[in-house]
Image 1 (cartoon, rainbow, N blue to C red):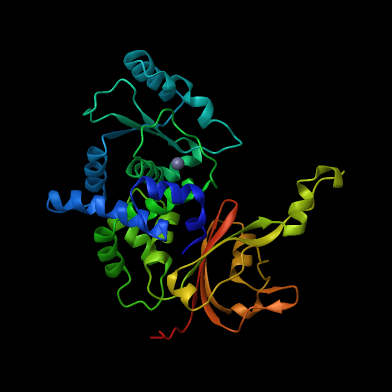
Image 2 (image 1 turned 180 degrees about the vertical axis):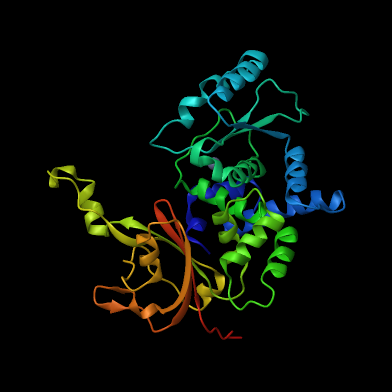
Length: 349
Ligand SMILES: [Zn+2]
């Protein structure tokens, strides 16, 4: 069970799909996978992820429209609003440019398309600026919406990033976009002979099987499928909880808020790490002695790796348990992404 399993919207979605699972997230994932597996079986298998994507989108009667430059908005208005009388397309741009709610993609059900039209659903994908890095993942996120859409969509929905449905769609995208029958052999080939997951393994999975996916999305897919414990971690400047609360009450601060400290803003232990109870509490301060700290301070956007001990992580006078770990980290513009793995791991069976 995950926290998402208790979200009423997720429970409702599972019900609407006829899934009676007590853990709706797993049930919905299985439902999506089995639909795709059936289509793949029908055509006798797929050779790569591009072929899978077109097979799936064809079955779902959906096409993609990518926004590469501002001119593409005019093109969409011309083709869909003027040409096909689908007026929602004329008003989409403002939604995508709302800085308070990052929108990467939207799924539109065309009102005037025939029931059997292959472009009955149009997924608009924003590929401008730094949204381009998410292109592959956004396409699969929109496929996830369509895979789980039973009822008609009256208007495209623009949900906040942390909305439970959005998080579930990301979860589905992470599974079906890195489709097991394509992903697993490439991970096995890339990690041959290595004891720990490494960035070079991730890079070779990406280049051999998912050339359009981002490094980060591929890394995340790899940690999830690794059988030994791996903690995926992102470190960025952030405040501790009490300060965060104060910051939303502006009257308390006549002066600019204090700078944040480097903290583990996102921590995702994989299944084996959860089983081994190996984790780093979310929002914990990154210790000065950690490679992650040094990487954040680095001038260049580079990678680094090393061995250290989890017991240097401390909060309110309490340290994490003694555990030697291999850390590999990459500095990206406003944060460090890292994987943390025990040097030695005994499988408890
Ligand atoms: Zn979405």
